[in-house]
Image 1 (cartoon, helix red, strand yellow):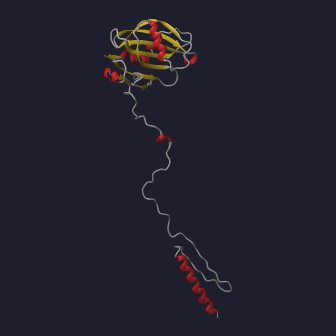
Image 2 (image 1 turned 120 degrees about the vertical axis):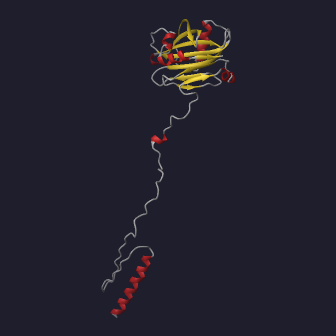
Image 3 (image 1 turned 90 degrees about the vertical axis):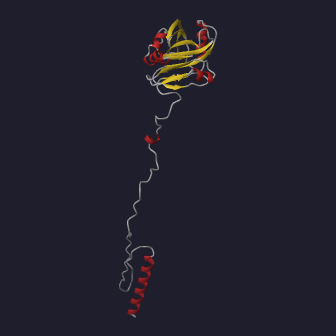
Length: 244
């Protein structure tokens, strides 16, 4: 009878071993002695996880790789502005072109477009502005220049109070041109402007209104010299050339 039990237990062990073998689990079957037969099963991985082949691409993007690159081209040529007379005319601007170097001051430049020749501002920290707007006005007196100045800055806020300086004459692009200085704003927003009127030709009703602006003090009188002598603007003034 004992032999029959041993035979039965042996067959059961073989059957279980076969079943576990299908699960790729090594099995060590040990027949326990009577009265309580049992199985001792050792489960050991048959092999280590396979190493991935190649280098997987990262699933997350860090801040450095997500940052925009400086290679993106700007709306104007780097380091300056250049608008030909033909290009200005095609945009509906007065037929007067100009070019100037703008490598100093960290300018951010836009234009030309159908609204103006150019607009540029310096980095944060204080007013630093250059604008070249078209004008169409037959009057050459200073009242007209003041009117053009206020019209050009109609989209600005915080200009009050506005104080105007005396009539001036400045040299720009080899031409002696009518100019006038203005002071606008208060506190850290106080700005000294120099507005310069450049006709498209002798006696022309149309032309370019140049605006040069830098930060100033509330108690200082507005002068064109204060704007035009500022280093980044002085570069524009000294390199500007007209093209008719």
